Length: 335
Image (cartoon, rainbow, N blue to C red; front, side, top):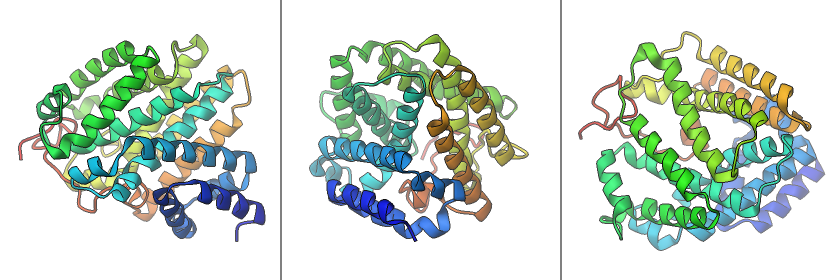
């Protein structure tokens, strides 16, 4: 039974959130007994940690309400509530990691930096989902068009336009665009199982660069290596959380090929922790506590056969697979 202060804090958050945000909190409360490791429960018992999580959730909730009109969501064939559960949970995790990371390195982001990071996450999420169903060239044509050519591309087109407008206002667009070009070229490369480790590191570096460009004009030298290791851990964690889905679809990733995937994510965490403790000028414990909690949650879910993508991130029950070559998990195949 949560203590009175926990209930009060979440009651206040509940009142401040949108209807979809309130539904999300209710769902989290219903899964707390079966889906959380002790580290995750401890994360919520600490009041400063709890209030930080609530603040990040409120930011993501507000950006969703501003940037995902019901008409656009409906045109794409999905309910706004379904989109909320698909977009906000992952954006919430990423935003909270970044807020704690920046605090550990003495960096105070502007409110618009955080909004840009959330929008980037929404675009990334929608693009990845569409890439499971449509070839990259179709998505490229959609984003280059003055208006979305088909209703189901309306949301990614709308979110990208909102993101780009804010990025231009912040003076970040050119740098982000350069990273995106490199990322698109990377996704068109075939995946070779014997290069799984280097592939993971290269992909992590590109994703890290895009998110860093959204939040920071320049990456301080002391933060660069910590960021690199953090995104290797985060990407490995994401691949581990999808491991059963990927195996069912015949997809090869660094985690499906690993002899001990859970051991590997713990090792990635250990290396990242060492670097953060070595270089962070301020208290890194809030960040490390969050990272430990996420690692423990994924490990528990994998051991129990849980579906993180479905239960927490709102993925569809039966994943779409348009990939004709299982050794090429990031290249779209033919229908």
